[in-house]
Amino acid sequence: MQKFTVHKGLVAPMDRENVDTDAIIPKQFLKSIKKTGFGPNLFDEWRYLDKGEPGVPESARKPNPDFVLNQPRYKGASILIARKNFGCGSSREHAPWALDQYGFRAIIAPSFADIFFNNCFKNGLLPIVLPEATVARLFDEVAAFPGYELTIDLDQQVIRPPQGDAIAFDVLPFRKYCLLNGFDDIGLTLRHKDKIAAFEAERLATKPWLAHTMVS
Image 1: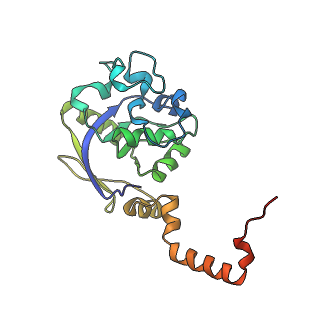
Image 2: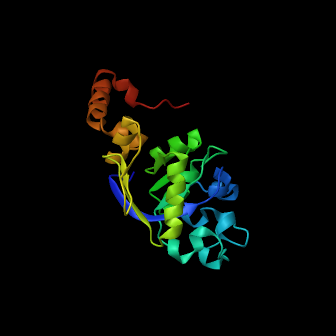
Image 3: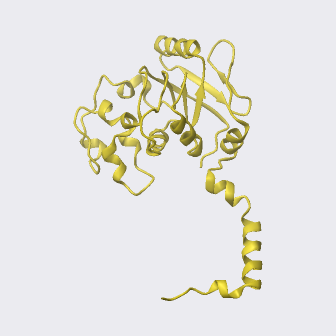
């Protein structure tokens, strides 16, 4: 998993409440057994004028020019600001996969759905909860200033706008530790790989029959 330490990026606004996971990555794209390739279909029904199907290349699609992420001023955005209850709906982990593979590193909103919020941390995305009034002010600044960027410092737990005071945010210490070090659940386990290997070696030395496979 990619580490998150300090990130500076262009901000894109998703000015909708209750954005659900089916809008983030529609159900027809969940058939893939791979964990990659979801970025082109992020917000598929909003980004394109034609119906998306698995296997259809992005170059063959008809982009919706009115959708925010298709507007030139937000090309390359890596920070998304959204309204309350972002990520509601089904628990599909494909939603943070799609956001990450599109290029987003952080999402700022007044509130998130619980499962989506947890899945973000497990996949290297930083979801930041800020007061609704603070998020509204960020929306105003993004609209007023093309090329608006924010710097997010996870270690210091602050967001630095181009002008004005830094904005503090909360994050649980364990989640912060995992993101700073790039540890997903497997990475956390592999911290102890030497102890695991030593345990397995001792186990097989004292119980060698465990190395044999039963044949029916």
